[in-house]
Structures are given as structure tokens and as C-alpha cells.
Length: 387
Image 1 (cartoon, rainbow, N blue to C red):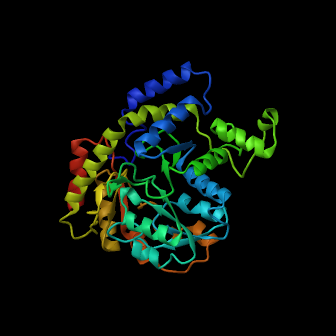
Image 2: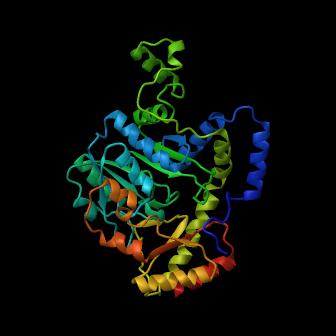
Image 3: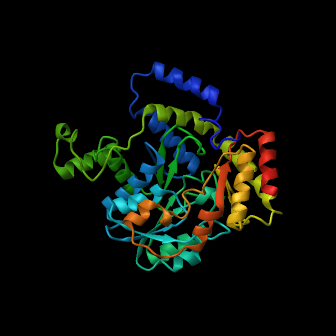
């Protein structure tokens, strides 16, 4: 069977041995030096100034929205645009933290929000929270210019697009901040884990405060001393002084150690996924049963799963059946049209139609793009895609 998640880690056997030896040798397993080292390494590879490691990608989104609210850069009740084709925890924090989610339809040739689609919704929006869907993007430079011109905060959920580039820039580097997931099966696995990246020093410090209870102990010394002076607390009281709204989203040293092992393979992992994607694209090119993507504006596409969107429901049933009969594990394209999900309909009054997201919801599926796929598996997948 060609499983959606082929292994827990890249180079799994050696990684598991290293983890076992690490656990046996350590006295401290709560967040410490390994986590800090992974943050530094990840920020460098992602080409951003700061990285804040957290327990998983979902709370990375929640943490980012909470930090922006704490800063006053988002305000409760404010409108936040997002792509209707997304994962629930890209939207749930908006609802949980008192913002108004504004679902925007995707384009079928990029599966992402375009400048034209956002222009119809930008009025009154405080922010645009983009999901870079399965390694793809639309015209991100134009979207950034729109946001800059209109005073809209641009943030990116880049959990599905580590290593993808457009305009010679890594996806996840267009907004003020971006989030990542290291769940098993994503580009880098730490079993569970996530990251928030930014170049904004004040936002970075707020993220650090909000990640762990609202206290100051993980901040740079100068910032820590300034906060204590402003709050008029001594070093003893500061141990349990809390400066802003927060939770406990800390990872463990085990997650950090695995991250440091896996990040060594970043280029290898991304390179293999890019090569696989290009091969899948060529296989689909002559198949009139499926939609084709226009990603000519992208330098590289790195994804952990390959989306297939059929032109009719009948064709979707046919191809899903053929993939499953060939032993290929498939899933819906992310969560489909998120506005059709029960939680969204429970909490958001929204009767608008998003025909493109609905078509992907109805006629789409994806299969895994794994860097350790063998030639037999790749040939099987390409034969199925060719129709």
C-alpha cells in the first residue's frame, strides 16, 4: 500500500536510535537547549530572523492570533479574511478569540486566494490569514502590496508549503509572521510540533510571552529587566508574574532534539518532494478528466500531498475508486470548503456560495508526496494520474 504517511521521520531507523539514546542520556526533557537550538536553525533555513517553537502547528496559529491581539494589532470583532479551502485550526482561533472570519473563495488553477478574490472582501478587513495550500500560492507579491497599501495585516499558514518559493522568496516570508507544522507526515516531523516565524522583534517577544503562561523567563535579558521595572516587581516576585494573556504551548526537549536531527535533511526532503511534484504534474498534463494548475509564477513547489481535482463528481468517484484499488491511501483536499464543516456552520452565520472551494470539496482528493517513495510507487501514481 502507498500510505499517506510512509514513515514517522526521514531516515527513520537512525532517527529513532538517536532519539532513544538522547532520552536515556538526558536529565531535563522539558523545553530547554534543544528547543532553542532548533528555533535558531529553523529561522536560518526559513530565512527569517526569529522562530518560536510550540507544541503543534494548530496552537502555532492560536498563539499567533493571541499575540497579535495582545499587541493591539488585531482587535476583537475585527474582520479577518481567509481562504475557504483550508484546515479547521486556521479558522478556529479567529472564532475562539472573538474575530469575524471572512471566507474567500479559492482559484481553481492555484487552489489559493487571488488578489482579485481578496479585493472583493478587503473592505473593513484587519488582516488576511492566508493558507499556502499544499505547497501552492497565488500572486503573493501582489497580495502583499494590496495589504500594505490598505493597512491590512498579512499572515501566512505555511504548514503545507515548507520549501516552496515564488519570486525567489520562500513561502511563509511574505507576511508579518507565518506558522508551520511538524506533525508526522508533514515536511519535517518532530512527532508533534509547530513554529511561528517573524522578523518583527516586538511580535517575537510577545509570542515568547504568550507561549508560556505570560511570564518573562524565556525573553532576552534586556527585555525581561525592562518588563520587571515597568511592573515594579523584584526578581523573586517575577518568577510568578504574568504580563499578558497566554497559555502553555511549550514543546519538549524530545521534540526539539528530533527537529535538530531532521532539519539536517531539509534540502534532501524538499528536493525530493519538488522532483516528485514535477513528475506528478507531467503525468497529469494530458488528462482531460482533471483540473490543471497554473503555477508558472512559482520557482519551486514543495508539498507533502498531491491534490487531484476531477471535473465532475462522477469522475471523482471513478478516480478515487481506482486509486484505492491500486492500494493508494487518499484523503479529502485538506478540509474542503471549510464553510461546509459543522463547526463553522454552528458558529458563523454565512450563507454565501464559494463555487470553487465547493468543487474541490466535492470532486477532490489528495495522496501523499513522500521523499522516500521508490520508483515502483512513483510509476504507479503517475500511471493513475495519466488516466
